[in-house]
Length: 75
Figure 1 (cartoon, one colour):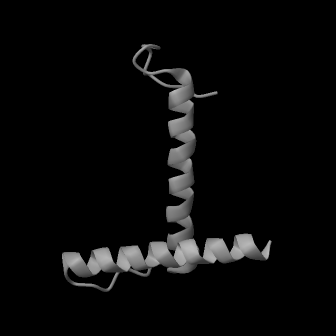
Figure 2 (cartoon, rainbow, N blue to C red):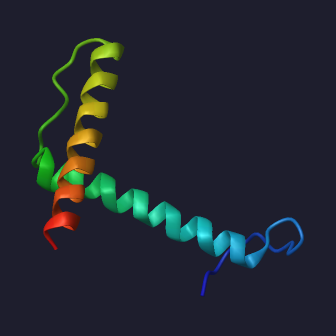
Figure 3 (cartoon, rainbow, N blue to C red):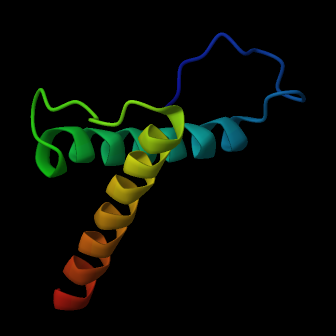
């Protein structure tokens, strides 16, 4: 069940909201994993420029994806 204040069923179909909610939590889980396990607690990005920060973020996402792919193949 999903509780929401979006009450117009034509504008906000229940199945679509539920699918989006599930998708959101998949993304939140990835971010939590990266922050707590991959990067480590209290570690901040070291880049000093916006481009460098983006590069570091993409690097973390790519490493996460590679680890997940390896885990899937291993299982």
